[in-house]
Image (tube, rainbow, N blue to C red; front, side, top):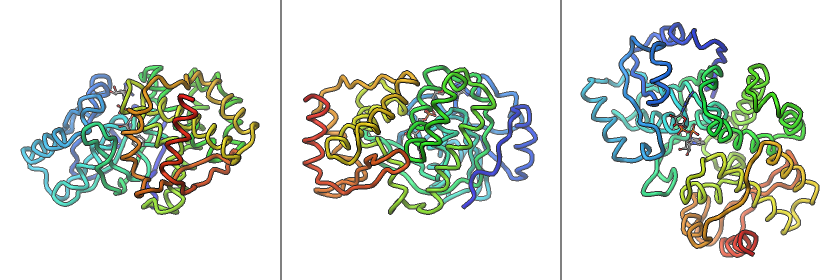
Length: 336
Ligand SMILES: NC(=O)c1ccc[n+]([C@@H]2O[C@H](COP(=O)([O-])OP(=O)(O)OC[C@H]3O[C@@H](n4cnc5c(N)ncnc54)[C@H](O)[C@@H]3O)[C@@H](O)[C@H]2O)c1
C-alpha cells in the first residue's frame, strides 16, 4: 500500500495537480477551506462540507449521497476530499459506500489531517455522540500534502494537530522527541522547512505501521495511544481531538507509572514535551460522564480492553487488561 504519493510544496500547483489525475472528479471541500482557496479548483464540481464534527453523521452522509445522485455521479467517479479530518473521514466513508464503492483521494488541509487523519484508510463517522463508531477501512488512491495550507490554519487548530504529532514521536523514538524539543520555537512559528520535516516524520512513522497491519489486528493498535480516554474527553467537552488525545496520553502515562511499566524519567520526558508545546493536561469532566463513553470504546471486548502504555520513549506496548481494573485506576488518577 503506497497511499502517500507526493509532497507538493507550492499551493499554486494544485490546479495542475488536479488536472494530472485524468479522471472525472467531484470535490468534497470543507466550507472554510473553500472560502479561502476556491480559485484553485474553480473548474470542478464540488460539494461543500460544513465545518464541524456534526457533519460526521448519517443524516449528513445521506445529503451528500443525494447530491452525488443528482450530479449523476457514476461508478468511475473519483471523489477528492479537501479539508481537515472531518472532510477526509466523510469523503472516505461516502466513497466506500456510494454505488458499493468509488475511488477517492485526499488533499488534507490541517496539521492533524496531514499527519494523521488522511493516512491509513480509516473513514469514520459518529452515531449520537459516540465518536467514529461507524466506518470503513478503505485506502485512498493518493494523499497529496500541500503544507502551505497551514498558513491559514488557526493557532488552536495547529495545536490540535500537534497532539497527534507528539503521540507519533513518543511511539517512534527519542530521536523524534528530540526533533520536536529542539525545534519547538520554529514549529510554533510554522517555519516551513521544519514543518515539512515534521510532517514527513509523522507520515513515515504512521504509514510504516499501517502497511504492516492495515486492519488493526496487531501493531496498528499502538496508534490508539491516549485515545480511549481522549475520545471520551473529546465527545464530552469543547476540546479538540488533539488536545483530548494529549490529555489521554498524559493520564495513560501516569497509569503506566502506577503499574510500574515505566519509570519517572519517562513521565518527565512526556510532561516536558506537552509543556513545551503549551498543552493543558487537566480534566474538568465528571468521571461518570467519561466512563459512559469509555464503555463504547472499540478496543473493549466484554470484560477486557486493549490499552497502550509507554514503557520507554519508542517502546509503547499493547496490554490486554481487565476493563473494571482500568476504570478503577483511571477514576483514581483523575479524581483521586
Ligand atoms: N480517520 C482517521 O484515521 C482519523 C485520525 C484522527 C482524527 N480523525 C478525525 O479527524 C477529525 C478532526 O480533524 P481536524 O482536526 O483536521 O478538524 P476539522 O476537519 O474539523 O478542521 C478543523 C477546522 O479547521 C478548518 N480548516 C481546515 N483547514 C483549514 C485551513 N487550511 N485554513 C483555515 N481553516 C481550516 C475547518 O473548517 C474546521 O473549522 C475528527 O473528526 C477525528 O475523529 C480521523
